[in-house]
Length: 223
Image 1 (cartoon, one colour):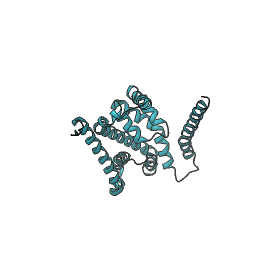
Image 2: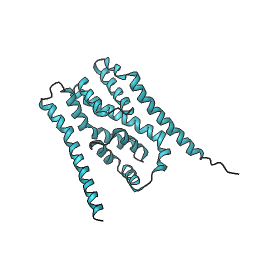
Image 3: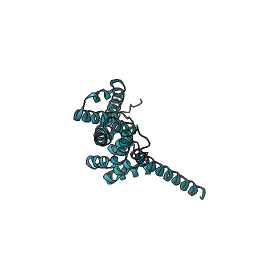
Image 4: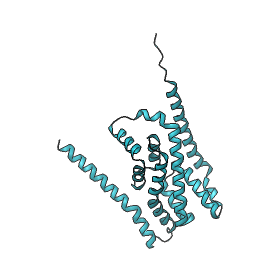
């Protein structure tokens, strides 16, 4: 008689938690689309600042693109208050995603780590948490949500992750907030400087990636 294979109870619990994580993230995305949390921004003064921070955090957990949120911070709150609210929302959203990933997804996904590249990334994140987080936040092109969950699934500690997120997010966030606050005057020096701060690192990262691919192609061709 064939013997039915059963998953260990610990593995089943881990998969159930992973499924719950997927459901929660899907629910957050649907809530942002249906509920329109931006309605909270009708308040004024400090309440408006707090509401924007909370809405920003929820939207990042729901995979909303941070550049658009940062521009909105500048448009709605101005450069200074917008930067403060956006950075606070970034840290709050990153912390929420990190905790969700750590509590609900890590146990199920860590056994899937295979291969030299994935193991190397996991080791780098686990052993150099603050430095790795700073790099992920400062380098353009690293998806915000992916960085959050990669950190959560590694052995990185929460405090270095949040500190690295707070510090590393400031330059790009400030540039977008300034650009949003000066969107009505695109020829102003502040807008042009902010645009340069956004564009130059992205261009350098693109050139570095192209150079790395070219070196890899030459290395393969010489074999």
